[in-house]
Length: 183
Length: 204
Image (cartoon, rainbow over all chains, first blue to last red; front, side, top):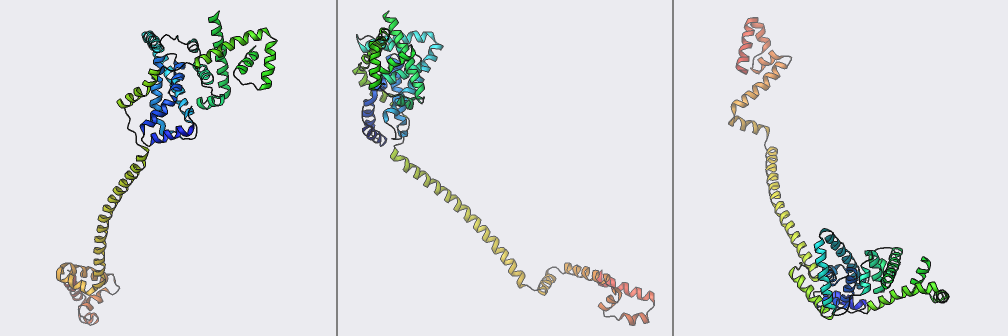
């Protein structure tokens, strides 16, 4: 991860009109954005859509960045919010049209296979989709991104107690799901 | 059970200090049930570690920014450069001030000329009134409107004469006649006749 001063320089350059600084800034964090979106959404197509939405928001809102907190936390807050909003929209679409759900599932699986070649879709990634969104989010942020409870609390706006509870529930549920699969 | 599970999670998650870790490890050695539970959690944590090592597809990673650039080019919102914001504000403010000043200055001029005209007219009248005497006024009126002036006189004097205590004496005096002398010579009827004649000549 890049240090704050490097991020701040790139942001300042971008705000001064240097578009290439924005590209450089995004290249540093695009994997983080993608994997959060991918684990939240459970497929590549939706993850890609979330990534693009996040980049557009960052591009348009970067002038509001205060240079007080780390850019990574600021960016992650946008990514987390956009991911949840996207999932809400997707669930609503699924509710409205069952055909859309079937088509989407077929397409997403084929694209994921195409992108990942012969690599099978991660078992954990599949199991994550069984968790409620808030538990999934807490688990992804803590387990995959190594955020502390306090950092997750700052990003999501939830209390440390709530974050811990969601994380522990997620672990226990995933453990049970993996155990059942083995049995 | 929940307490034990939480302990396992805290241990695997690195949330225990060294003393707590040692205590947990000794507990783990002595409990088969705890070991069984521990293995299940350990499997999950190992799976997560394996999942972390997955890398993003290289071709896809390279396509993210071009795809984003295509999107914003299609629907690019108008965005001010930070350098341009303050000059634009200053320019707008200057234009606004100029507009206000222009409007106010034109209004002031028209109002001022009206006021000046009013004042000069008023001053002329006041000066004229101060300068002209009552006699001049009467004589100028007599020349221009003699009938009106006569009627004013008649009304004024008739009212004054009639309302006074010695109305009849005054009437005779106005016309140069000594009332006391006439009264001693003339009868009452003759006096009434003269009196009426004087009134008719003087006032009607």
